[in-house]
Length: 543
Image 1 (cartoon, rainbow, N blue to C red):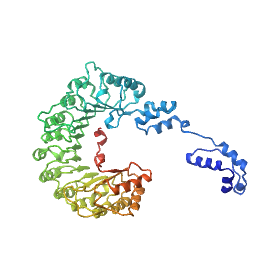
Image 2 (image 1 turned 180 degrees about the vertical axis):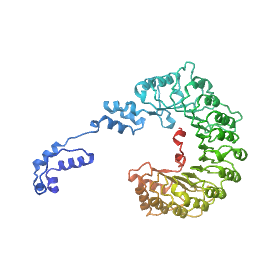
Image 3 (image 1 turned 45 degrees about the horizontal axis):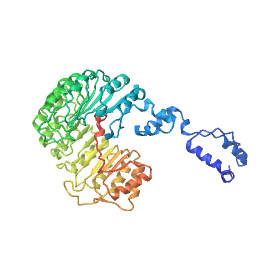
Image 4 (image 1 turned 120 degrees about the vertical axis):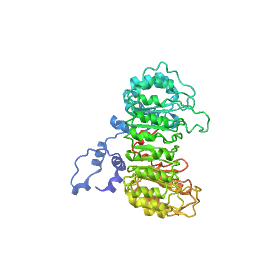
């Protein structure tokens, strides 16, 4: 066909042809003549073919397809879509789009102004589709809990946020509560005792597998003289015999007596997280490991664990393979004794742990404790030299999915160029040293070489954080091509965190021109961690 003649005689036909290719519409055409007669198609036949093309807009797509498109929208956008037309209003109210509902505005959830209207929504919009819901303090009422129990039988995950409470609602008439829950998350208040409320719901918690109790560490002053036990953990444990995962986060009153209570009845326990429970010393771990034989994950970040009680625990017969001892005061000798007895590790986090030294890491490598390691965090370990870390990455880098090694001022781009080639399966990578941390960096870092190494070797990379400051990085006008390389080759990269400055602006504009607006972020607002590689990460998430 003479494309030039076709274009000049009927330009609207060419536009229709381009639109056809863009939308992928199936067009029914008459059989064309053979190639010898193709140049003889006249304008009349072309106009007939153009008229036979049919026009479709978004609303004519099948409902199943429309729902699939709407499912990618957050609920705040669904509410805006409901104002467009009747069809969109009907689609946005489909219960299949409301399986997971977030109602805490401070965590990007919807804000409910009228609890009476919300009661009506539970029945006709959520109903049997609802599986997960977060309730702020003002919506934790007897009427709403009754409605959830009666209208939402498939509700499995429930968050009750009492953190802003100064006074509880009256729960004397609370006679129903969701009874098929797999997970409940309770955010505590500093001043409100929850025993009156909990007494009404204990009998409905027997199906629980995941228990999360979130303390007030971010709001409280630990130095306060009186610390109140605002919830009775022992009574909860007595009513939940099937718990697999327990997360007690930032609760000041939790100590080893509470851990003893947990150990006495939770024989199915697989994961115990005690992060920021500063009163836990470790005296309960001997009984914990003896009774909870299925325990695989133990998270002890910023706890008060001490050498003597940790050494008395029988680590050799335990199944613990995921361990977090970040910011603890365990000594080198204690860690040597513990790691010598422990089974092989798949996850290890020791940032800000002064007792984790070259000798400890060398022992782990020598005894083969890290042959199954998937994720490791060695950031800010001041007594750990990069030579031993290089040995680790050379031996076990290929199996690693995540590593965080930041805060060592002696580590330059040459270290990472030599090690990145051993980490072809890495998904999460955190490197660099912020300006002014511990020791001042005297050398300049050639950032282009690091990006090029990642682009060449780490094409499965999903998260990358580079902590060096603007003054430490060295780059020039040709850096754009190296940014192009990592953007094009690392197609799974959805988070690139850099220090704020001119180089950050260069990288951000490069990604935005390629329509990847939300990839590049700053270290002032975002922080990358390897915790997403924990086996129980989805069970431990809150807020």
